[in-house]
Amino acid sequence: MTDPEVTDSQTLPDGQPASQEAPATPPVDIEAIKQELRADFEAKEQERVSGFQRLLNERDEEIARMKLESLPENERERVEIEQTEHYYSSIEQENWLFRKQSQGTEAQEAAQILHQFMNASDRDAQFDILVQAVKNYKSAGQPVVEENSVTTPPVDKNNPAPQVSGPVTLAPDGTPIDAAFAEGFLRSLKEWPSS
Image 1: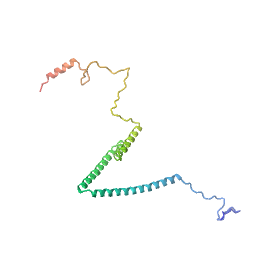
Image 2: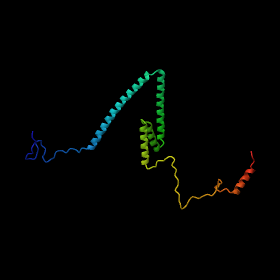
Image 3: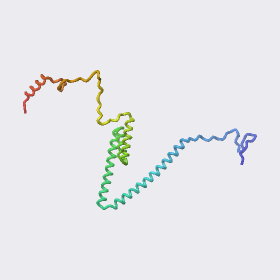
Image 4: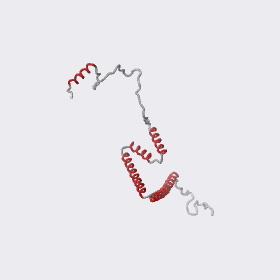
């Protein structure tokens, strides 16, 4: 079929005037569509991963149950006690971290780092967490405090610190103790009754 041609009266065969343009399509927001697709994909991916993780957890629990059942009675009781103690210690740890997080912003940040550190899979992961914490601390513009770092005040060579010649003992009020003061003090001690 061929396209309808415009007649002399400037109308199309379906009755519309030829001078009107075809209706325009609304503009398409490509970024919004991308974000919507990305969010949908991430939600489906998370659902798949969580479902797979649930299956893995169920399998691990079944394996642990079977291993536990294959142990002798006294060994089984020991393992159950260890698992219970581990469970309660992890709950105590979480409660302690929660209490520390409620102490302020710095405490929250420190508790989060500690939580990550304690839940790290191995020493390398723990070390990486510490390295990142030190980097963040340095990037905040605060100097890292080193142990055994002694700071001495600058010395003004034009105004050196006063030098004391010989041992000088000061009284509690800061006045120097001379021979006359010492004699009077010792005399007052002789007058005290001895016990």
